[in-house]
Image (cartoon, rainbow, N blue to C red; front, top):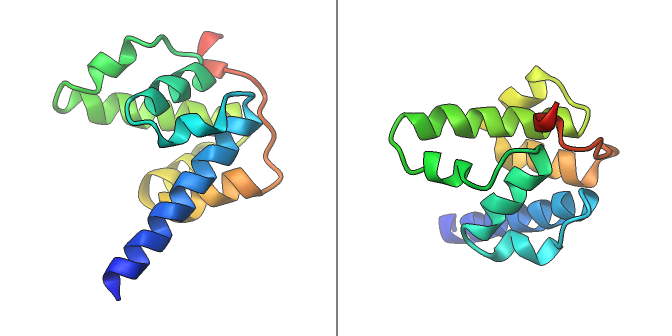
Amino acid sequence: MSSLLSLIIFVLYIASMWVVFTKADKPGWAAIIPIYNIIVMLEIVGKPWWWILLFLIPVVNIVFMIWMINLLSISFGKGVGFTIGLIFLGFIFLPILAFGDAKYNGPVGKQ
């Protein structure tokens, strides 16, 4: 039963990422390619591709991942509360971001 629930959450997460990428005018199929999906996410939030190297450093990766998630929230017009939701309850908040009325406002990381 837990395997089925895990599979459902995984499929929902991938579908949500696909729609988020599509909303940001990026290819939806990029959501299913490991590592490349992070590079595309960095493009969406306006950060350089080499940030992916920072995700390989212990402790630093946590800080930069939270920063990237916050920039994602802001890029879609959401606030800090939504960022906290994405961090702790991503399987709920990512589908809200994807299938809700959130519009992509452009990469905020370049400001």
